[in-house]
Image 1 (cartoon, helix red, strand yellow):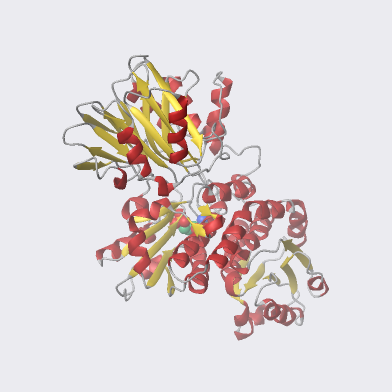
Image 2 (cartoon, helix red, strand yellow):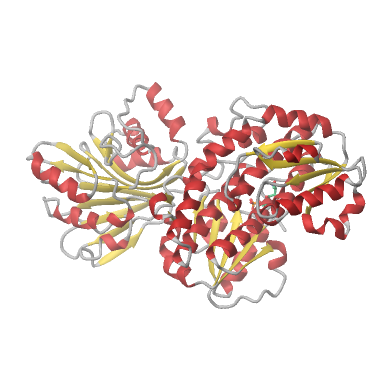
Length: 607
Ligand code: AGP
């Protein structure tokens, strides 16, 4: 989370902007910088330094630069893309230093945009996603800054709060916002400040305007106006992104891009040394979250399975009693919603009718509503009080894959966030944060077994009945593994909580019945071994998902797929990956349309 400030008004020195920036230093302090339009020299002067704002002030003093003029930009950085270096510090500029900007947010498609801009001859000097925006504006600039900004932001996917100035259109400050907060502070007798939040403008401004998503503010010395961008529904902005990227199916592409998806979901959201999660989208409700006593999670399908795992996380590590409801049931029950309850909905599409209806019911009853959503600006996003975006790009395959692991990672971040507001210790928080940080590389390790998993799928593709078993954090993974297999390959499978096997489902087991046991080396491993022995005792076939290094398991099951060791709370994020690949390969081998399974739709916008 970074802090941005822009200033335009009567003052020619940088005091106002720097003072506002200091009030944002809590948002990040790896590096800082500023840019000022000097009308006498007719140029924009930029200066940056690593470290805190004090270090920047020392550098200004030593530079001998006369930084007088406006509009001006100021920034304090929390590093996400690219290390803590001067080159990566904001503000960033275009090739010629004529257009400068500061940014808070994440540009998900920065790699594709950078590649196409470099092909057009643009020269980059930093590793950041932000610099891409400066070159995009340069590409469209023909003397009118807001017009160039309007065209540039339409190509961006992700989240941004921007403040921009241009040497060749110097009498204005342009600001733009999508899913990252931005306010305009209005002084009674001076001018205007834009900033990441109102704390920065309070001493200066008598009034404030909150920019909304898809709004572009054009501010001059005496007035401002706001352009509202209505994004077209089916943006073809990123043909590259919605192609299969060389894979035979979107589902396989999206499974294989899960390390990158996790990186984007986690970027800028972990403070390792303090064992904290930083979730900018919850900032305006953080005090309310500190007071909640109960959490209700509502979702459908795969997202519901994520919610079930969230329950285990929240109760064990945040100490918050948590209930999980299938959204279509929640909306027709008479749920008792005590005060100090928050309702969290999880939805990849942000358009699932039952989940949306559940939120509306909870809002009607005055409950704080939160979302974990992938589709930016979707109905559920607009309906909830606050939330966290997945930032994983579009998920085209009907089967939820990368969105699911992203949901689990964000639930782990939310657990850390809420737990550290309560009794979760610094040491435990640091341990969880360090483990979360490793998830992308651990998932990448599992994906290297794709060929092995395909061989296992070939062995069992002709089975027509099966079940998945798991316990505790992996009980919902048993449900999810069954859902993936049946919705992709039409093989009938059900998810069974391990302890329930002997209460009925065991009757299904014989030599024609497949059981997949999700049994990492965790606190309930021994219980899972006894479940496996119950199945083997009836000649059932068993595939185990086990922790690497566990050689014993090979002696009691038919096939083993290994996952890396990780703390128990995070095992579901790893254990689901082999199940996704298993379902995918069985579906392909059985000749199914794995991207568009029969009878289903990607977004269920009807009851
Ligand atoms: C899962 O593979 C399915 N595509 C389906 O269960 C999906 O998870 C469910 O419809 C919820 O969708 P949402 O996350 O967009 O709300």
